[in-house]
Length: 226
Image (cartoon, rainbow, N blue to C red; front, side):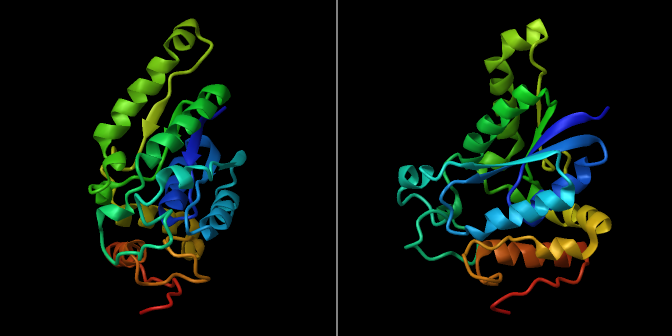
């Protein structure tokens, strides 16, 4: 019987390719968060990713109240601010991954999963909650929070895993995903806007294009702007 892994899934490339990387070794459980993001289309895209990965179970968790708590701190929940074409700290949603991973960790402990994974990679250096320093410290904190259960055998210790820890770039992840799923990778959703097709202008669309180029895979994604 395979061990279990909980994947934090958006509808993006990184999530699908993360699942492609781990799927042969683990039974996969997915969790997606609706946190008030402007790109609500990513929820439907996450369901698509879940189907492609053949998840054992996929939970969509609504924490939309976070949008009011975040206020004007970032452009992903504040739709009145324009989306930047390249990295700007306004894109960073305050400790978003800590919120996601705490909830995902609770589910992992309940499932007896040994891994909680999210798609942070080596190109995410500008995001503090994607770096290994963050994920390793949070892993320690989550396990400490269940220390007595782990010692008694009622809980299984979890490993918080990211492609970043394995030295994988976005381009490397895409190659893994494309090898397994082919053109399905182009039906993922990376755009920060809420348009019907990728805007082609925001930082995430630009990163998507660059990663396909680095992976030497022709990008078949439809963009509003070329």
